[in-house]
Image (tube, rainbow, N blue to C red; front, side, top):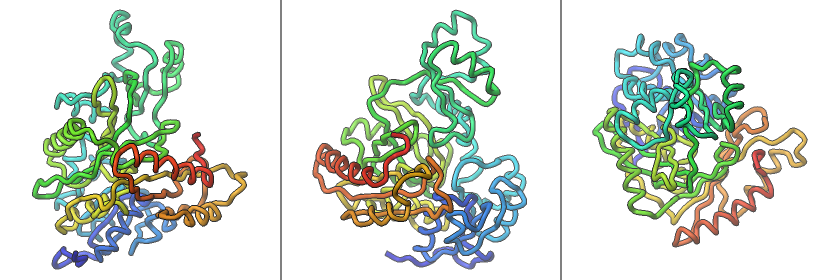
Length: 396
């Protein structure tokens, strides 16, 4: 497989620019390096994870338009670490089809309100929802159609459990409304589910879609604790998820990598959220697949034909390693050394300067050998216990 550049006649200094400098940008930078591509990132500090590996850093808040302009002047194509971008401002300077995905494609996905409206318009199953502003205008009879508990979600910026709040009673709701700007939140029906699943895939410029295996994610306090790949061997379930993904990316003419989180249970398969970017649930793909999610995004944005995606093992487990309390008796360096001594471990440290409680500091992946889903699950449980004995979850 050739790792040579495939962007001819560079007119700018760097083939790829990344808006953002966290761990996702770090792994995108690492993937680009394997393709012999030079990368410039826009992030607040050279000491941010991606800043440590990039060829050049524009030290600016990723939301600041002056930094965006500098990045555009330096780079052939611009990709996004996350969806926290200002579409309207970027539209003022985008006249060369430089962003991947395009601003038009990503616009319906940058906040929860627009995501929900897209999903409803396409008649794709999702939990019932309403903006809090509209909820306040409901009649008493209409309010009775909503039963507690409810889930309140922020319109923008929610991740790793942030921006989510369980509303258990009417009193909880009244208190919540007093504390928060209602224009920034929505109410969603509470879903009882059997599993949380995620599907990550890519769509290239020709419209070809490639998929990673659907995975099961295991949460603790609304934060992903670990991921099992593949997550299910149910043919109909996999096919339905793939059809939903394909419908969305084709509807938006979306080019790049995208993730969909699902609830699965008695209500069937429901979309929880869409992430227009690389995603924590597919970090396993770095070791477990012929092309990682980061490689797919780099290839698609830089004009390289993306490889076909296949698992090169029976399965994988990815475990998130979050920051622990300052008084935890084992230092982070020692924990990493101990984990590296577990046979088959693949550790990715994000290079963050400070270990903060709950902060994503690293992840670890193991390839699994079990031939059946149950065998792989049991194997994963053994490895999970070994890891958590060394580096426990702060959310447990």
